[in-house]
Amino acid sequence: MKNEILELLQENSKYTASDIATMLGLDIEAVQNNIEQMEKEQIICGYSALINWDKTDKKDIVTALIEVKVTPQRGEGFDRVAERIYKFKEVKALYLMSGGFDFTVIIEGRTMKEVALFVGQKLAPLESVLSTGTHFVLKKYKDYGVIFEENKKDERMIISP
Amino acid sequence: MNIDKLISQRVKDVPPSGIRKFFDIVNEMGDAISLGVGEPDFDTPWHIREEGIYSLEKGRTVYSANAGLLELRQEICKYMKRRFNLDYSPTKQTLVTVGGSEGIDIALRILIEPGDEVLIPEPCFVSYKPCTIFAGGTPVVIPTKEENNFKLMPEELERYITPKTKILILPYPNNPTGAIMEKEDLEKIADVLRDRDIVVISDEIYAELTYGKKHVSIAEIDGMYERTIILSGFSKAYAMTGWRLGYALGPEAIISTMTKMHQFAIMCAPTTSQYAAIEAMKNGDEDVVMMRSAYDKRRRLMVDRFRAMGLSCFEPEGAFYVFPSIQKTGLSSEAFCEELLKDQKVAVVPGTAFGDYGEGFIRCSYAYSVDELKEALSRIEKFINKRI
Image 1 (tube, rainbow over the protein chains, first blue to last red):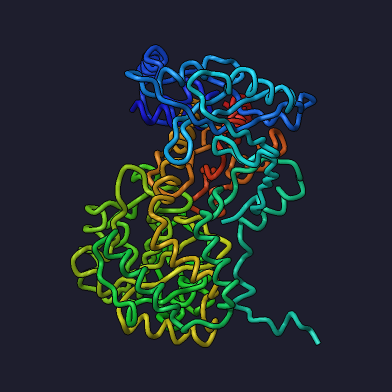
Image 2 (image 1 turned 60 degrees about the horizontal axis):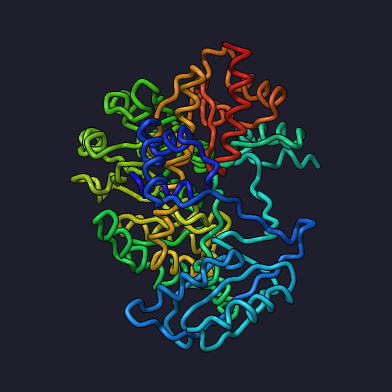
């Protein structure tokens, strides 16, 4: 039941407990309790809207993907380094990677310069960081499974057998 | 020359589809929101479309074998085995058709002699009766009722059988009611048919869309395999309506005769669609599960909301329609739909479009997003509140 609730919330976090209860054929109180519990357990970590900022007047958001190579710290591996990185509010996402580098850091800033400064002044100087490689995002086509700017029109005949 | 006089009277006598009539009314309205469609709201899954595109890139733009690409027929037979444990020969018992609709037409035409009676449980899909008449047969309607969950009851079937009865159409999971026939229901039907020379045309186009209960084909019931034509297709299960692809399975003598008619009338089903369909059969199971699960949630939403409005709403177990009763409003189905359209700009289909026994009901499709459904339901609720 929990997974089904989560799937619906992930599809649309605006669904109310009553919507979810109806759609899953469950008791509304049970759904409410489950959601509260999962919020407490940090299974549900928050609710946010997926925004295509390009369509707003606040277009000046720059997203960059930074490849970071680090030296893992004795006894604590990568986690301690990760913590030092993810605590910066500019860091929107941080992933530990396999392959040619160690971390993917997703940074958002107002300008390319701001992002570059952050990398140069905050990220690269960290003791355990060996090297960084910055890639700026030019256009977002799809995020979190949602295709931006998709002009989808219902082309079905309005009545059909 | 009076060209009208030259058109077959038999064809002229068939009234135009009730769907068509209502379509024209809704179309004039322009900006209505509609719960009127009989096709999925999903796009065909991309990997299936991509196979179709690839076949075009490869220049596979020629006729296929009359019965369909052998690989597709093999995949269909594997699917029937894995889903329903039914054995069909890809070379002798399988025909790929232009949608389920072609299957209905040619199955009726290869069987019917003038005067043969065809039993049709109603409410049902719109084609059976006209196709029977076009083929020179006599349609005999068996009413199915809400109190019987819109199932075909054996005693009703028995009552309508005459020495002229040749065919029973078995349209389950049902459009428009959403009713299904379970194994024990089918066994009772089989008991009535077993010692009679009646062929069953089992239209199982919605077989993949049942909720909570797995679809059972009448061909799985003892003694029925040798007298059953299964009609199915890709439209509903894989959201492939526009590809126009279906299939017929049945006894060798029947399928070979259907193939003969198909060969002269159609040549073969669209080749591009057939390549896409191979991919659907091979790798489409997950897509079906995803779509079924989405429909199921919307189904519960619809039933719940209609009941909350104070209407009697049979709980559908298949297809993607609910069929609530609007008798409480005192309006006929058609009047209800026209008033609702004028008052709230919501289009639903009058039950009578699916036969006279659909009077008192409306068909609402839930092949729409949850947000669209909620908006439409709120408007219907406003309308109902004024009436009851």
